[in-house]
Image 1 (cartoon, rainbow, N blue to C red):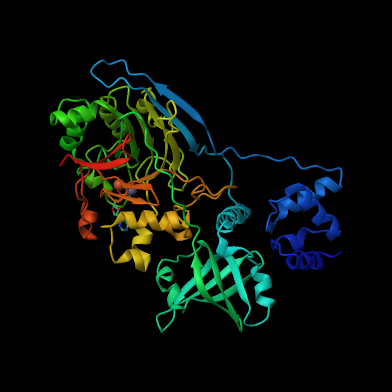
Image 2 (cartoon, protein in one colour):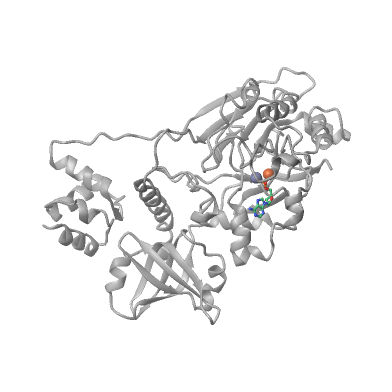
Length: 505
Ligand code: D5M
Ligand code: FE
Ligand code: ZN
């Protein structure tokens, strides 16, 4: 059977063949191929038929087998620390790094982008298909051909979204089999339409009329309600970010005040008791101000050497009690590539931090489990600096009206999309076989920095945390009318699952 016929047959059977398939398919017996799919995937039949699956099939019918190269993107590591200092709480701390990007040296070509978007589409589609409303999803290529007035359910990537003169929205939705226009005129879609962005993967249910699907509902990947986890131990996790060492606006007094409190030197009796039980500190990037991050930065730096900036940062971190495990990811000011995922800071630049046994240097983003002790499974913390957030605050009507004041809305928005940077233009991405910014494993806590304003929230029982900073308002922030709130520290009690905010300014 010829490639074109083969592809048509697959669509007819309800599969989504990728466009590349028609260029690589050789004479193939469709029945034999469908048998292979049934036997190989059983109940978990893929909707999407791509090159990998086809090659796998070829592997079973010919003597040539593929060598499959796994790209190492994860690194698992567990560290337990026992408290030796009798002034401090004696509970152990335990950190397990669950997702940590390890860079590979590879030239990027156009194919990497194809694979990257395929992976995003495939995995988000799988999440979307668990929803009852999206049972019986058909390929867009097939939806184009079906009769008028038929009801359809589709899953696709948002290729375009635009507002019509009447104020309603119009979508161009794409999957590997085609592109279709979707009208979001129905009042039912109005609110959701206000938060649709380029390149996100979503579901539509609606009715066909002419060349258009009139949507009755928009379905985001979403998150199901999470169980609340409470540890038997009263231990605390703290969340800080954006220290910006080296900047003339870094706040040394306030940061030292924070370190003193953690050590139990300062605060009320109650606050000192809490400090003793702090076992985890998360730092979500912009540790230093960096060099050459923006034009004219040299005039706003008091430490102009990047190594010295990290040395100075380490001096503070070294003063934190050793039984506290500290998890650090980079941000856009740090000395590592800006494309995300950003690898952990390299040893040569941040060597003083690597000397500290209680410090874990991880990628941005990263997924960390803390306090998996005894019966308690621990809580999973998704950390991400938040460089993509400026884009959404500016571009999404639903978020624009609040600006930087309600960061919990940005967290909720991204959790619904199950992605930390759904739009291509929202951050710089390094494409790889796996879309590392996709939120596949749901965390118990999501923590971000970058916006220099602390805010805590809860969405479907996921705690959402925007950490504050230890840098005062910069000239740039003054110019754009940004009002940072430095010196706030969200703290999480693992026994009660409650968040509180401490102030050091
Ligand atoms: O970013 C700190 C804050 O400064 C960030 O949340 C908003 C503001 N900022 C930074 N870059 C931009 C752009 N490009 N547009 C608008 N606002 C911005 P930091 O990463 O510490 O410099
Ligand atoms: Fe910052
Ligand atoms: Zn930043």
